Image (tube, rainbow, N blue to C red; front, side, top):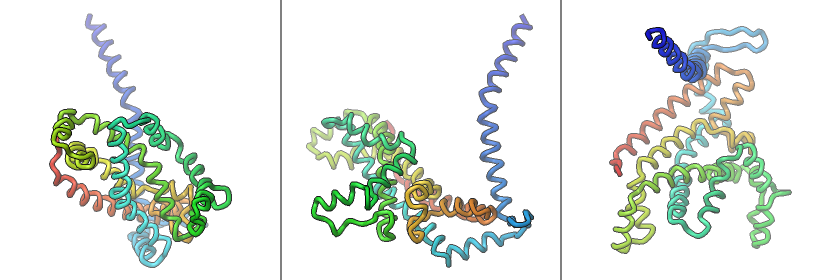
Length: 303
């Protein structure tokens, strides 16, 4: 009997070990080890000609600070990264919330609209970025012909090639591609609101917009706060959209901090890239903490 029990214990131990060994190893290698190495690299500099690695102290941090102040590429990178935060809070989330609220009311063809809104979220970003760039292409796209058909020829332009419209076009793409995911999360939260609250509002004769502001938003505020935090932290890792659509151009108009780090790594400037990444992480942590502090002032509603 004791032999069977020992065997069961061994099998149970091996099963548990097989389940946890991969995630633990993944965390140790790709989180702990990589972050420690990044911190160490920030104080080193590679000579790509000789292959020598020298300790340079805080020289990389000083260089990055000077570039952010003087170099237009780095100025745009930091500015565009910070611009995504209010764009996410003031445009993307309200649009996602309104879409989720309409879906929850089961308007006509709401199942079809759910698919249309969520579809970009399940496709590869490479595919949707390529499709979007074709749409706004001045030669083969459909946007300019539509504007011409509407008598708005003065608005036609090379949307991704014009420095005055490139950033707004990239941000529009980010909003279009992000509404589906946020709407799905918010729709799940709205679905958990007790139906009695809606009935009370209907008896009081409140409008749909009042119901949205006074009933829905307070009840799903924890979910909204979470999406705000995710969007804020995501601003400091935003690079693939600009990389695929404009490669940071024209004239660095759509450059982001994360994309600039990718370019530094591609050029072999590992120390400078690591220093920029650490500074970006510090700024991101400070901004996220401040926003979270203000969000936490609102009392969460339990239901």
